[in-house]
Image 1 (cartoon, rainbow, N blue to C red):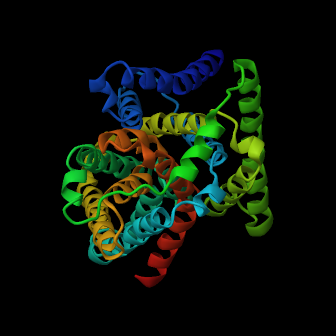
Image 2 (image 1 turned 45 degrees about the vertical axis):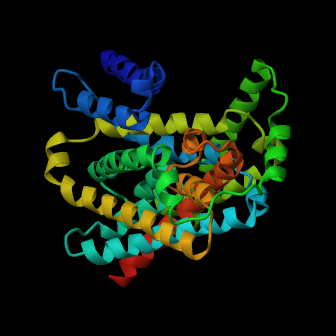
Length: 383
């Protein structure tokens, strides 16, 4: 029994530390920096979980999965500044709204086409709306809330990484030239927001103060998860994951209105790290045989929804006369979230769109869960 406990302790340490090593690996060189840490965590988990000579407690890994995402969501949302998003330039706000409309429309179209081929169509559409208006944390939260199989979660993430990776390469290379043939050029209109962000970035706290501030917000995240679970028990007499996720999202956004919480550095990174822990742990639970037997529909579904969302956004941007750079940066904010804003802004050689892109990306995290669950439930009722 002592050996079992030791084995579990070693597994927990591995699942918590390995994502850090994978993150370091992606930063070693430009070649490895193109690899997604989330995909690498999945792959590492799948390899370990499917090697018969490595003893793995899959139930323990699943417990860690179920804890990581709910704790990550408030941490990611704490840095959201919804007030700033509401004060963004008119064209930026319109363009991001067009991204959301495009993603929802393409997910409905995907459901209409693919519903005869997969019973999971409504769950797939819900997750894709979450990931393409917010990011991976939204996809995870919606997937868990809708009781999606582990294999499907990994498949949809893998498909998203591959198709999203190709679109990202296009965004930093040919998008400005090609989109520029259909859309007007960028004009300055974000100076006020830029100045505000530069002022907010000034003056960092010393390391010990940052650590204690971050630790206290991690505890706040734990409290939020506890309150959300408690409300679910009170209302439904059981732990209804979809309700828990929506309450966590709401409380995380509510906390972000406190300036001290919102300006604490490192909460977003801590939340993203927990998503990597989740990715590694869920990879451990994946059966490779099942993974390959059910992959094609999920992959085609993801490719279709992303491609249609991009084309619809371009079409709507032409109608509303949104400029090239704003169209590109808001597309990046919706489809990838804040992490990809700076590389894309550098790719299109326009740093003035960074702040508006980051703000839209964080706002997307805030609304992604609501939109994803709403679309999934509506599709289940309609089809």
